[in-house]
Each structure stands twice: as structure tokens, then as C-alpha cells.
Length: 390
Image 1: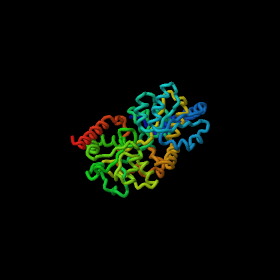
Image 2 (image 1 turned 135 degrees about the vertical axis):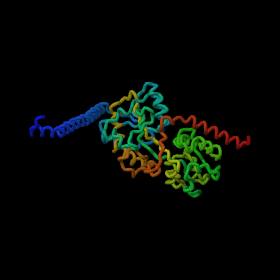
Image 3 (image 1 turned 60 degrees about the vertical axis):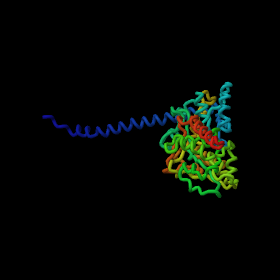
Image 4 (image 1 turned 135 degrees about the horizontal axis):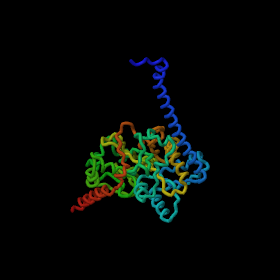
């Protein structure tokens, strides 16, 4: 028969779980403290190194208003922000030409998806931006739409997506039709609209690319829809971004497709009787594009620490609120992918809506427009044959 345990032994055994729990708590707390101290030390060291560099150079398309507003300079007065603004189609080739000449001037690029993926990523001149993220409010993926960080490149490292806009498809002359007639993208190929649609030629860079990717890859639309649109509807094509909207306002056409929603809204504010067709309730869902909202970090950046400071600042809650607010002054404000900030300043046509089925069209495997252009060209050739009677 085993001897009975003493009272002291029993008490000691009873205390073991509590002792273990306390020890575990202390270990976890220490670990958390080390993690917290880790990012703080890294951030402070990066900021100090950035101050010694004294400058950061950002090439930016579309969303330059937030940089022009001076927010970064107020927060980091010892780091001069040099913002080089322009259209993506101009700045992308310019950066490549500078680097070929041995001039490494740009630290960061903020632009649409195409130059970052098709030019910079393809040329292997990008550093992983993911490794530059330091601040917890930036690295915490629960603060971003979908509970994750979004990237265009397949590795998920180089091209950070910080904007997710609802992408419209059509615009209309307000005196010519009732937009409630449109409940599906297939309504755009209704024979009643044949010869009555002006379309921006999507074979050149500009609005409409996101729509075409959405059409081509959507199981309920696909190449068949694109072929019908371009072969059956007798579209009037223009490469002028503004001309189609002017024609719409003049009553020359009741419908326009592949023009910028922002441009249409701006024309409406200037007095033209035009507006965009709300596709948020279309049965096939809505394409989600990036606007000008992707960010990349260059290899051999002249100011690598200042670049890290800018990236973390720009993706912070404060800066993304400023982005949405500042853009209201010059255009329709984009919808940041941060979900922990107010959306009051976001343009209604850009704002993501709870419950809407969005299809992200900024996927790396969808960037190649070659097969889409092939369908368009084949359909247009078929339409031309019909016209000529051949």
C-alpha cells in the first residue's frame, strides 16, 4: 500500500497547472515583447538611415494629389519627397530608359498594373516590396480587404495592390435611354443597340482593359460575348479618350463603352447630359480593378531606407485616408483596399459594396491581352466582311 501524500505535497501538485500556465504566459509575453521591440527597433533604425539619405523619389501616375498635399513632408520633414508625375504610358518607358543609361533615379513607382507587371517585373528590376513592410498596421493583413495583402505578380512579393475599384462598363445619354434596362452584360448585345454604341478602342492602353479581361475569363461571358459585341453591334470605335463622351453628350450615340467612369462623371458635372450605367447588380458580377493603385520598389534604389519609410507611410491608415480625401478634389476618389478606414470620400462608382460578387481582374495570369485582342480583331474583320458584302 502506497503511503498517503502529505498536505504540502498535495498543494504542490494542485499548483502545478497554475505554475505551468504562468510560465507559459511569461514565455509568450516575452516573445511578444521581443517581436514588438523587433519591429520598433527596425523602424527607428530605418527612419534614422532615411534621414541621412535625405530624399525619396517616387514616380507616380494618377494619384499624385496626396503627395502634392505635403502630408509626407509634414510627418518626415528631414526626408525630401521628390514626386515625378505623369501618365503610366510615359513614366514606364522613361524609367527603363533612365536605367539603361545607368541613371538609377527612381526609388518607388505608383501606377496602374500594366507598367509594373509588363515592364518592370518582366525586366527584373524590382525588389520584393513585401520585405519592406514594417509597421504592424501595414503588415496586419486583417486590416485589408479579403483578410490578405494583394499582389499582381505570381510570387506575391513585388507589386502591391492598394486600391480595389468597382469597374464600370457603360455610359449613356440621360435623355436617350433608361439605364434600368441593363441587368446583364449580355444586354449590350441586344440588337436594338446595333449601330448606336461608341466604343473606345481597347487595343490601345487605357480604360476598358479590365472589362475585357473580365469578359474573356468569365464563365458566363467568355470569348463568345466579346465576339458578338464586336462583330454584331456595328460599334463606332475611337481612340480619343474624350471624343466618345462628347458624342454621347451631343446625342450622337445613346451608349458608350470602355470610357473612364471618372471622365464621364466629370463631363456630367460640367453640364453634359451623360452618366454611367450602374453594373453593381448585374447578374454576372462586377470586375474589380486597381485604378492607379499598385506600388513597387526598384532594385538599386538610390534611397533604399527612405523608400521603406515612404512605403510604410503610404500604406498606413493615415495616408490611405488622405489618398481617398485628396483625390475628391480633382477626380473620383479611389477605394483603398484598407477596410479599417472611412469610405465617405470614395466615389460611389468606385466604392465596393457589401454582398456584390467581385471578380479581381489584376491577376498575373490574366495580364496578357494577346488572346483577347485576337478575338476582337477576328470579330472586327468578320463585321467588315458583312459590311462589304464579301
